Length: 314
Image (tube, rainbow, N blue to C red; front, side, top):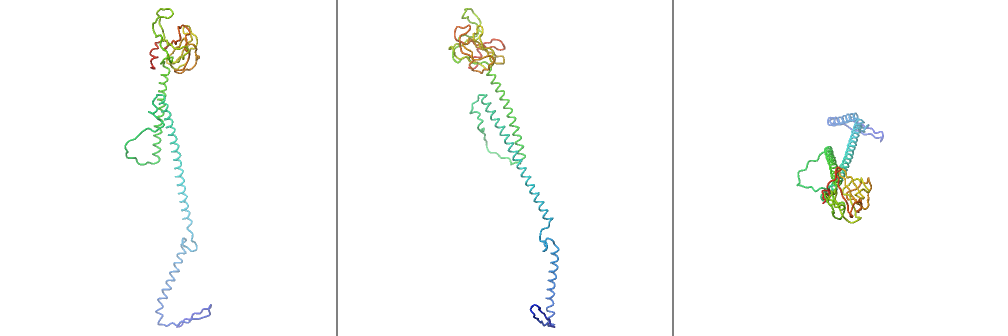
């Protein structure tokens, strides 16, 4: 049996002679070729039916792309939220630290003020430096989260506020104590001189008879300063019988002091004077034998012996 193959393009023919004896030899080979071709055809149909790997549609499924885009947006939103929360926490922490710094500054100022009021040594309580602390090293606590840090800051801030209020109360008490010392008569009304007459019974220099002297006389140089022995308000400033030029000061709490025989008066009624302030010049006006200050102390309106007051500051 012959097989003739014709090529129209080339204008040629081929002739193959098949021996019937060789047909059974080629038949298995032809069957294998046809089987491979059939499998390839079925595979092509299967892959064309799958959209993901189709030769006609090589893009990703739109639903999958949409899911991925949605997840990316959610991650971005979560990141933005976390960043915003961190920034808010950071700002809140900065504000809280600023508040604590303000509290500490007020405490330092109050402590410095208390040091000045109490007359303490500056080196003993130096609020410009951190207090000396120390001790052996111990096991540290584990780091905590931000919420616990804010809780600790809240507690610390409350403690600082309490300490500040306590210091303010102490300052008021010290100021009150200092004012008590300022308004309570103490010391001499002159810078230099001597006591020429004590409080009590004495011989009157003009009559020679025994009389009661209701003050203490301080003799000194004519025209020297006469000073207030306590802070207060001037209630008298002028000439009075027996006293000459008189200055009277009300110190509150029942105390009043008088300064007589002045050469000149340097204050007027209603003036507020401080302890140690010059109020007059020493002289010999009124019933006097020479330059001196007749000093009297009244407590609740009654004349008392000035001796305990003039020695209080010495």
